[in-house]
Image 1 (cartoon, rainbow, N blue to C red):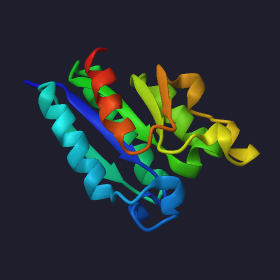
Image 2 (image 1 turned 45 degrees about the vertical axis):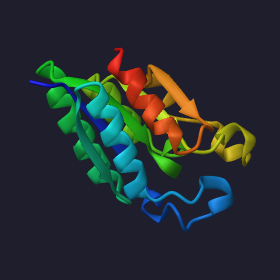
Image 3 (image 1 turned 90 degrees about the vertical axis):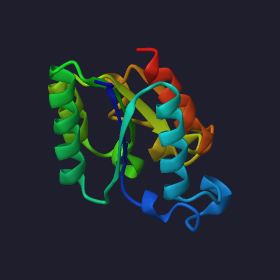
Image 4 (image 1 turned 135 degrees about the horizontal axis):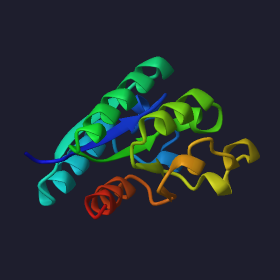
Length: 148
């Protein structure tokens, strides 16, 4: 059975393609999903791809990824938590509690933006961080997780 790569997207990422295209680009979340599916297929990985504007739903999916991890069936979790990156101790606790191997991802370079975006609650529990590479960063993240 192929291992699974989970790709989770947080609030407002459903607006990709129309929300601040100068920052996030013109590609849509469907484009991101297709890019991830192609990258996962290259590595023989199954893909679980989700987006939610609700913190509790994201936590439930982290718990699902944790169950796969406990069964040895998870390659890793790629997580663009959006603004929750900078505010959610609950998401950090979910990652920490499940022990999932996490790659934190941001489309923009959060360190070149507003000061409040410079702090991440997820970075301390992440194996790696990808930021500022735009939508292509998702494929690179899948490539990295495939090597774990």
